[in-house]
Image (cartoon, rainbow, N blue to C red; front, side, top):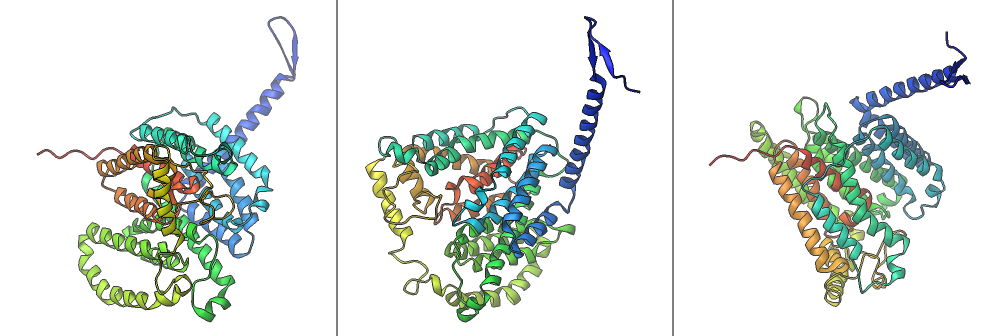
Length: 474
């Protein structure tokens, strides 16, 4: 039986100390039970399918705001009670995808500020409850260089008002110090022992996020079916390029073997079909290239199935390619300009030339990410900077030679990582990274901090944590 009081060394009576200790024990017991439940959920094979199913239910019932709230608070729950930070990626990606419903106006979502406060508090608790030691790796110095280049971008050219604008600071701090901090956080967390293949699990997360992205595209057509059936031309929706970006990253992840080593052919077809129906010209061109590379990877990986693959290519692939060639002019009729997918007057072409002019006028530090001098050419949705719509143009025009050197170092280091860790699932990771690189040739891509560049930083941090491939003796 617990005593109601105790005595200090000075003889003073402390009332209620044992009941307080009892309450602490009960709270600790509740925490450990919730911790075990969170860990069991993350360990379950049903974790990803159930999360996608729940998010899809919210999507197709028009409950996007409620779905975002549910995902936000589940994210906070897992942040506090699950020690594995990788469990947070799927709810985070599903939240980003479901919030595209608010793409034109985030007012309703931002009004739910308690959710964001809860997530911030949960992040602090996670660091306190599951401390780790900071780890540096091969990408530390390149990311430091990129951080410095982004912070210095526009030095001597951009006005203080443009540089300090909230949108500009989000991109500058997000792509610079933010990504460096994210890399250190992920590398530190990867020091924990796990009973599963980390890279495979992360790529599987990208795959399930891609499946939900396909549901987003499907929902657009379900709500606009009558309009689509009149012309069979893809309808416009503001977040199609974001969907195309996610699908291009997820497409190679369908090459991961399912149960029994089976290839996810249905998933591969669904992701590619979703890419086409986004109406994104980048998705059409780069998705077809990436699909071909996925087929080449599977053909090389499974020599015992090559005869079957050749027969399938002849009986299914050739008719499918012919059907695609006939369908694209109809499906993309609303995207055509003078019978072509892109014209010389397209803003992407105009912006590329403008980037070169901006680079020549400010060759060392560029014009800066927040520079608004090109807003007359094209300006995107609310909350975005004025993009050059090409990765290399963005680096040169916004960050100059300093940015080119920093990003050149980063990409060289990433390629070296993929080569020195080749084997296993690394080729699939390389194809996912290639998907992001390809879409960055025509869209913001890697210059979006969340979730695009965060995904890439995490992917390469995981690859970096893998053992190097042994060098063959000559």
